[in-house]
Length: 293
Image (cartoon, rainbow, N blue to C red):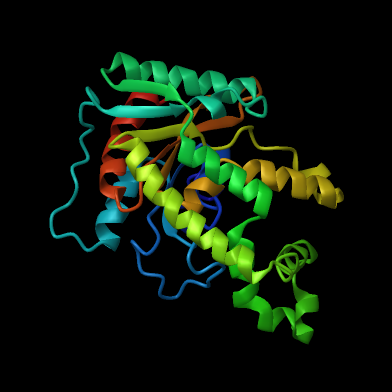
């Protein structure tokens, strides 16, 4: 919010399941989840060690590129001039596009962005991204790996008298992972490694494009009153960013427009792990094409 209202030019955050990309999307900002450990975690309070990623929330991709240069200590700064997207391949996940949970405004603005890319000479392939869809299903059926990692990291606190001082909703989510069997965790780690490899082969140089969030920012008051509604809405809000976290995909959330009430929508560009620089360069060009007039 401080970035959106121009109190500060940038903010740094951590993204374990979407906590950079989602706030950026709901506030009309750019949010960059870097490949895990691209940036130092010194001084960062951890949540889930293999999923946490440091990154900026900014008002432009240019600002995100400058931050990336600084944090990577580059001697030669990145170009801030958008390059041509002619020939750049994008995979638009058809299964996400056709998901009824994606609201009309989010879908319409995504399609408008895709048409702008196509008009620029980019190559758009519309089909399900199998690795992405398999990761969605894995999380739905077996739970979120980050919950188990967070519980393991914070169990001493949960087992202490200080646990009563935790936010009740946070404490409940952490405690829910206490009973996850070791065999399930081993299988989840193995599946993650397999799906990461599958994703790289499947994209083969393309960038994945999806909505960042399937809906716009929900009203706050009902969520504060209803614990069950809060849990359901939280899961729905993070649903499309969690696969990228599990697959260690760098991702850039870009504003794509707004709904009839003026609330922001966003698109998410994602790449395989380690392709941060290529992703940011592409995002700079995409931003120039889809930015509101």
